[in-house]
Image 1 (cartoon, rainbow, N blue to C red):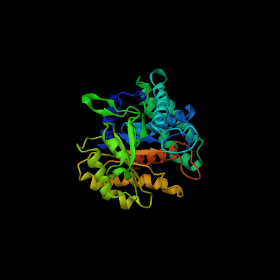
Image 2: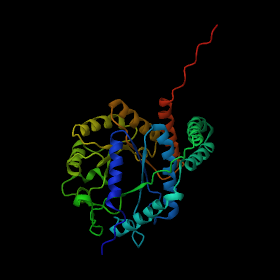
Image 3: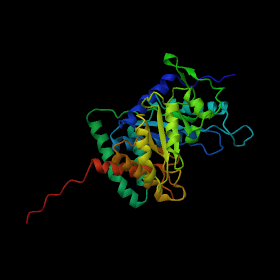
Image 4: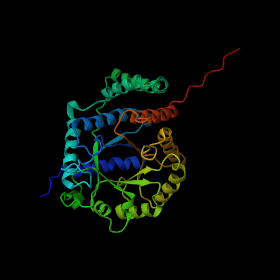
Length: 356
């Protein structure tokens, strides 16, 4: 028996519109990895921690970048009933997504987190950081606090934070989750707003790509250092034949040592197809043994897009706030990127020469 839909097509359509803005440089995608440990059943505290991270990062990046931040929370399906790892089954994905969406929707109305709440969490994080990082981050959080005080003084109310969307990985067989009918007779995935697949799905007859092509949800494609240009162009033609803005997001995982060599040509190849895609970066995946590489890849991603005249449209965050095994944590990266962006927007004032 088919599982009931968890969302209406309009929700995925709304996200697609926001991603179209990110593709134009008018918004920024913030994708938070699943807070559920591998092989574990999703729990409320895992998802709440993930949503709290998104809220904190949204405040910092929206201030530093000057554009709306589009939050998306990734979900993982629980393991099989016998506890063994393996391909996720549609009922498992449905159950995990239902739990995530229930909590996301609980962050609405009067209990939805607002900007001052998330800002206070960020101030506490900075206050507990090592002295070097604290000295770098406190000027930024101070400017954010001043902006909030000014808004309050003008009788304004700091806005509640946007409600995150939910992403999930496309399955080879979604027969237990029939796509829902959408506006104009279109078909939409009823479990996740944003649906992800790997670049290796470009091959003819590949189940995940075939399933993704049948739905109207925005789609994310993971692109790695071994991804060929032909594979990317094939996926564009297969998944976005009408070149619809917001349909495709490419999440790059190149590594700090390869991104400068690989990203520019790929961006130019995609631009030649006239596809309006969101470019996002996952700097953790290839830099697990190189703590400095996380910051270096993210910074290179932002700088390369500035050089190319294109848009750095998004960032993937791990579910943990603090660093692990010597690597910077999610908020460390967010604050470091924000300081760089904010410094460009707020350059030091020139000091007048002292009269002799």
